[in-house]
Length: 227
Image 1 (tube, helix red, strand yellow):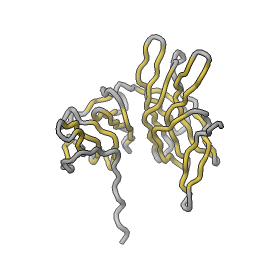
Image 2: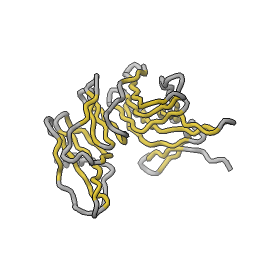
Image 3: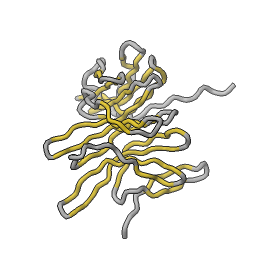
Image 4: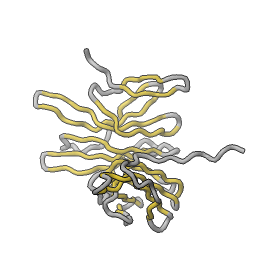
């Protein structure tokens, strides 16, 4: 029996399943998008007589169905994938991933502007891997992985953290002077212990977290209570 890969959407009353335009794909990140048009990113596994390969998969939901976006990957890419995704209220999209060629490969950052045009941006974050990406209102980008790195529109700068061994996943940009990231510290006794970092516009500092075995994957803030 052939299985169809899909995505779930909450309608307010129940979950609605929709089929992805990829027979064997997986999604690693999703973003709400603008104008009711969510985006999702990951990779599709392709099987040929020569074997299997991975191809970057980026889809958006339009008119009730998911549609694949054509990305400007290098023509020589033999494998590729997307690890992180973010969108902004005005319709811009950023997708961070990787590609491989017979000669090597590297990381790649795609940007879609409000007119729908795709370009590639510098992707040398200074990190070994990226788990999440978030765009600020001022046009900057922040990524997390085995550390934190920020993009000012031209180049990346790896951020100085209180502990260089911190591994971070979830991130929330509340303003240019209030950025939070969560993950874990490797620990010889506890294996992993939760880590919370906050940027105040000048530097990153650690926020106290429970000293117990565990790790944090994401962070969210409650909206102020209505009066």
